[in-house]
Length: 198
Image (cartoon, rainbow, N blue to C red; front, side):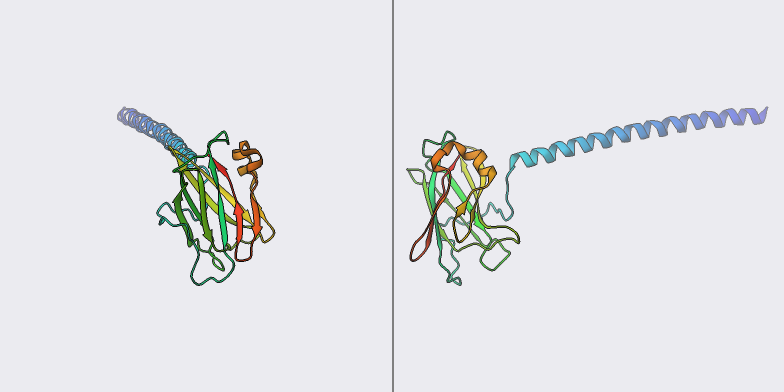
């Protein structure tokens, strides 16, 4: 009889412990799922906010249009163009351009600058020919911002010309004949015309 009472008491305690363990496991599973869900949503939102951020981007850049290094004596490149509205027809004045690229003979992004478009939506800067990552073309990265909108894009450069990516074509094809960059080799420098829309 005493044994039976103890056994019943043991079963009661076991059930209480089982319930509390079960409750703990169920709630921890729900909490972990909730955290994972919130984390993935936060991560997705973070990527959506700056969907096309390129390596080397730094928002803390000095305002300047001459990115050349005093220690580099190669022929510089002048990049110029016009920023147009999303429909590709109206020039956008006062927009902020941020540009950066790998420095010559380096794996560091020391060449960077920031400037605004003029009253006609035009921009221009001068820089050294960028280094390139292994297996890729040299490139200059752009972030353009105007009226709470921003876009990231890149300009690919080689000795023979200047090119756009498929992503750039997709986002800026409304520029029509103004879309593709044009490169000229002049006596003292190369010049590339590169238009963007926002």
